[in-house]
Image (cartoon, rainbow over all chains, first blue to last red):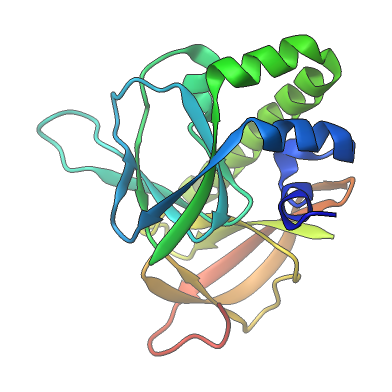
Length: 150
Length: 70
């Protein structure tokens, strides 16, 4: 088993996929490395990729309007995904993402490659989309708990 | 088992974090979130486990000094 396959098996987005199906996703992903404080993408950018964090943490921040400062919404660490909203709804980036660790390693999956794979294998498409929905649900629960603690 | 942990900071001023880890978080351990270090004060199940994934919620408080872990 490759180390990348082992790592992907620990990513919830791929939970329920066979090794062969995960390999197909690995084949369309591209590794990107960012330095601490480097912006991965900015709010309102066009978005055509989602990312999986392999090493390090990222900060997700949102600026409500041009007159207000950016507010940090959450930090995401290993195994988490981000950028998936623009991948699903084709909208602009809803937040700015910044690398928070000295060497932040992410795997990027391009929307076109992802859609092609999901269309060629509906089994992969179903599992990944279900897992994306669960991930979004989990993030909402985190936000609710945080709001309840305020 | 992979533990997907929602770290919520007491007081709500810090946004917290979501991190996948292979070790179950335990009360008293330290974790680095962003550029700050926090101590875990409580751990609960957030959603039922599914497959190899457990979904946990950990409440943490900020500490001073070096972290014991991560």
